[in-house]
Image 1: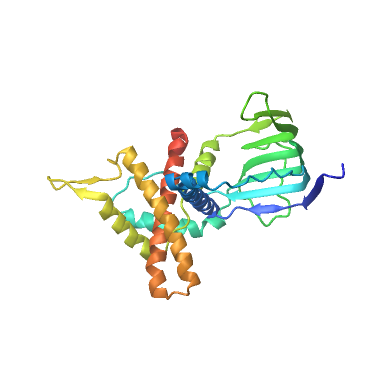
Image 2: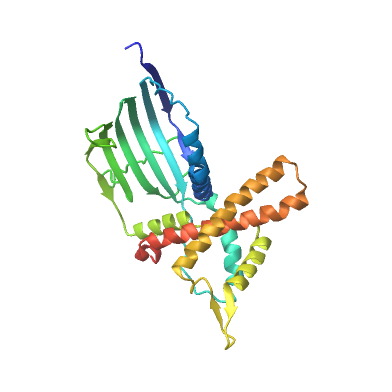
Length: 347
């Protein structure tokens, strides 16, 4: 009808290729932490602001404010369609080294190797590659939300000797192995349909949400060999390793400070690690304090930059902010490691 606001968006992408940078996971975690902390802080401030007091309640009873009639909103009709041809995503995998026993002799060597692994990660020839021949995703909002999509030629695989400069990232099937792609999962085609709607129910204060999802995949082909455990270990190490690391001289200084701060001397001159003996509730409280300080310090640094503060003032604040980022990243990735299957970590 003529009273509906109608909008349509059509996007077509041909042969988009995405190369996953080594620090992308770290940036994503920090972005999520900033968003979460900002939302929680805003929600607390909003709750304190909207909480009625006795004075405001008494004032509303004295002053009679006329209520405005509810405004009639027009129903918005939005159509969106995304069409992609030859999608490719490449994630470089970190080289997996078997765990070695930590001693004072090889501690410095491991620190140097951890720094060098970041510079050589871009040169790694082992990749996790996602390819998609064609996909179409459509969505419409007109009182209800309706979405449908289809795809052809989806495949993700662990690729050896992969070159991201190649024009074609699709897997090459070998005639000698009966067109089998090892360490890969391939789906020839598939489609889905989703319908979501909220309806007002009689004698109910809240509407009821209805969701219907249908999907169909035409076949799935998975082929693995004996090195799949190593590939998963590389993937886990890539996800859980931190790449936002300072230069090696700063790294050694920070490690000395952290080792000294995390250890205390007992009466019999033995040392114990504080983190290992920390209660879970105390650990959660510590993480909340770090997240809150990270949020407040970020706002403070932005204010100092806008006021064109000197480097002498900014340097200690930026150093503290980077240390907080490292602590939060280490905490999040430690939680991810606990969720990972332990046998894969030891392969």
